[in-house]
Picture 1 (cartoon, rainbow, N blue to C red):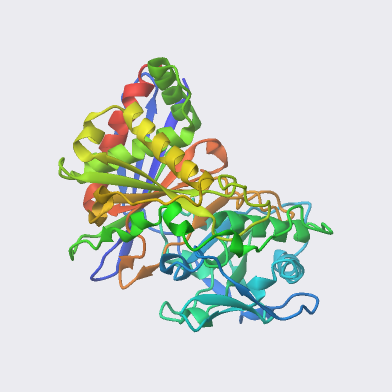
Picture 2: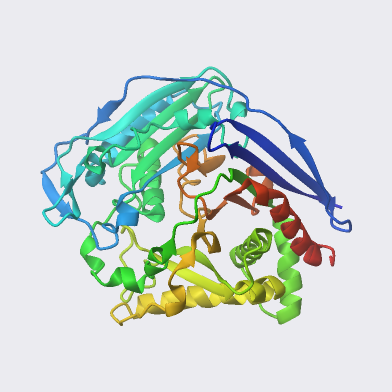
Length: 482
């Protein structure tokens, strides 16, 4: 019988000492057996040093007219424009390619900036405090780096090794937004011939889908294509001033900060393989005669497990916020190639007692309804929406954000060496604090776990063991029936 493997990796960030180490939890069980956990503590990191050369500016390969572009109402939201998202994209060596990936990607960047010229400009403030893009052609920042060891030192990029931060270039966190580069690309070569592309995007210029579109365009040029398969479209006027309400961003503004605590936060990852998900799908279909998506099943599983593990008071409400691509949901749909922020926030909300005591199917249906409601609001994008009173003053620990990165296009950015073998965000830690403490990210697992889902999360250290137990308990109810 095929065996299932769930992999937990955690890196511990101590708020006082800022010391870091990893816990690794591995579970292996056959379908007909109950899973059991074993711990491997103090697994440690494989240290490596990144040698970086001085950053250079890469400008568009042809002169372009200077202009000023306006951002949309969503691009200018404080929670959007103050955020830079960093990603690491890993590529194996290819025996049939002798080219230098640094040179190939740097030259391709110069060419693709002709299409994506706002990334070669700078953000600047308007008189009313909003931001706009000064398309001055100054260029994107490019960094060449190298590591004198093989890609194997990276593992699955789950343990939050501090050295990972050296695989992308970042200015000090207190740098004013107008002094930041809208786009930074770092290419780090490894001794084995593999390499890592570290990219940093200012969120005001693009969302995750837009960033994936840019990376695929950059990769097409790197492979020698004469033109992009999907030409970028700016058109930020498509989003109206009232659209942040229709896209339900008010759910984020209802948060109130948690009380100060000395609790440690842990980065942890969990891989649920495709066979496990298939078993759960089959069992749920037999229960309700409906087909559920892998996303819906794993989202409901993670939400219920977190709520139970955190022991949230049963009288309180809990929320699962799900960023969704709304390009096709607007009426009319946004044109292909639009790369601005076009995401909405679906809000699945339930009473904590009902969520943990109810079935997995019940949680799935709540998630489905929240997504359907958001899509409906997008299609009626000029209808007034009144935020619910029940959304006000939610405790921060009662809200978790779930973002699905599996289909953004990062993995398919083939620069000539094949698709990426791993993609992961890089979370920033400042003064021992994680910048986004309540989140789940769905990523693609490594190559040998195709079609599974890797859940990357940030949780309180005291919650990890109970979270493991709850996930194990819920899955066993479905897997053991096979």
